[in-house]
Image (cartoon, rainbow, N blue to C red; front, side, top):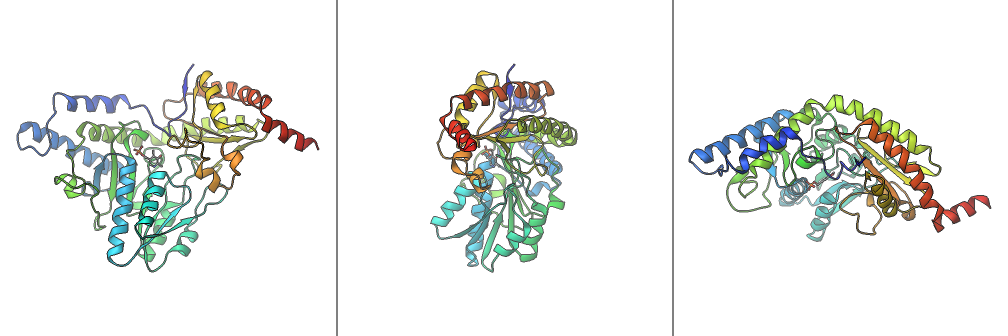
Length: 392
Ligand SMILES: *Cc1c(COP(=O)(O)O)cnc(C)c1O
């Protein structure tokens, strides 16, 4: 049995999305900017996809911009709000310590360009409070960007309340909803944010396509100059197959969200209960304000990389921390922000699930993970010294 438990890194493109995309690679290959019939067909598909995405989010089609990834959407939202603010001498930006690197590294770059960045700490479960945001906002704040749900530990942030605070204080609020869209209920109208990012491949759509929703009236600058695509906000011939696939995937994910969410929550909690039985284990992230498909654990005395390799041999594809940082030896910035010491932040295991996950797969993980942890501890000098300390 091979269990794919790394859906926070990417998901399998669904059949409906794939079938919707296929004609646009070959038969309907037109450029939407062309005036002839091929162009018109591509342009109609683009318009249909835009309307579909708007419907799925509770937004209007004029507020939807297609981009090349979730990362690009984050970059554009943040850079646009910062540069717009700077024109009014507002050069202060606010975020949290557990954002995705697409957000944190963009803010670092803006810092080098003369902006000031406040990084809000999170509590032990990964939560940011609306009060923290209210206290951080100043007269010269141009943007608050806080993620809807965290990609490593699954914590769901109180973004509607944070949006309310930002609105009262007149500051633009952007949220990275890449892990949330299509996974938890998300209605743009009730959310009250100004900008929101999502990505196709995190919700059973294709890779290399994202959405930036930008509320009507909020200025949006382009990152890429060239043609007039996306109403002058994103030059470059549109990725029609990708856009069509994303729209279908999002529609499908939203339609089955409640059912899948309820089923995954049961499976998630079964796995959490089982892994909690392992001595000196710790669940990372909030116990209940948590994505239905996310489980993240630390096991004292063992290292994340070796755990992943052995689990892979037993047919479990998981991840430690975020896919973008594995391969590097840096501990996860998210786990460090939760207050975990360095040596423990190295040893985390993230298991992330999707609508394809079955109970038999959860049972398989529960049967192989505890022996693997025990084996690694039996050969771990760190575990040996932990045991010695406890005995003395
Ligand atoms: C995956 C992810 C991104 C980046 O999306 P890409 O489409 O892979 O660039 C951004 N933010 C979060 C929270 C993510 O999980």
